[in-house]
Length: 331
Ligand code: SF4
Image 1 (cartoon, rainbow, N blue to C red):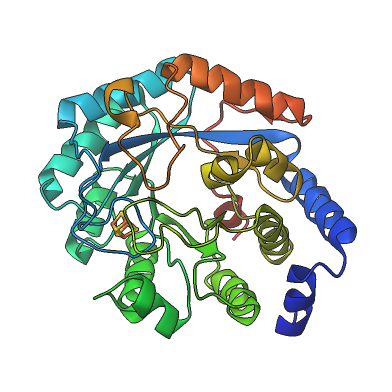
Image 2 (cartoon, rainbow, N blue to C red; image 1 turned 30 degrees about the vertical axis):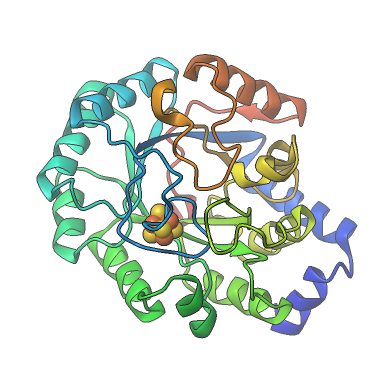
């Protein structure tokens, strides 16, 4: 698809055609199954200062927490009890946890829960990536946020796009299933930047691709910026599905933060994955990348039951499968 065609679709040239083509392609490759990944947000500390993110170092309004290695491993066991095949072990860029600490999480999750382990820990050294992969970590998520160099530098002060791309490459070489993604309507993002971001994201040939709308977070420089558009995010997801037929594409919780029910609706425009939070009740509300993410403080089981019901509401089937990358299996 040419960049000009992507731009037209993002502008709403043919929403009905775009959404139904993306939906048909998703069903063709995944049937009605929706893969579930249980997310464990184990620390909301971060050394970075991304201007859009509630966890940024300079945000004094956040009550910070860290879970112990044992607590994280028990969350992975909970995932297994709740019939989830995959856990996503996620934090800000928090180097308090050593390579070995995370290693114990990976081995603990494998021994106690036998789940696929996705790590989402930000910018770690390549040696860490290799170590965790060798002891059994399956996947790694490292979002790019935008491929526009100037916008990247502005949004993520002190960090460089080239370094992030190098890390994505290092993860691939280490043998992970690699996931990445962008934020639609990030302040400063133009329609042209978004069209180009979708093309470049697809060119990375990733196993998992996430696109979520910008949600303003209090206590950040963008706290008063306008929220992203759910419709733009849907169009971006649908375009990504057309460009990446076999990739796992989640419908993000950021959608629900903007409009109740938008996350399940995302399953009808190209997404085939939902990532419910398994973070313990005592800390879940503090993992505030944006408000509302963990506002529903029901226990993990009832949260999951609600997610499964939402999936069924849009005619899909909650899967208990590990849901590995089809892209890899098909070469
Ligand atoms: Fe830290 Fe990630 Fe938030 Fe940036 S986006 S401040 S790296 S948690």
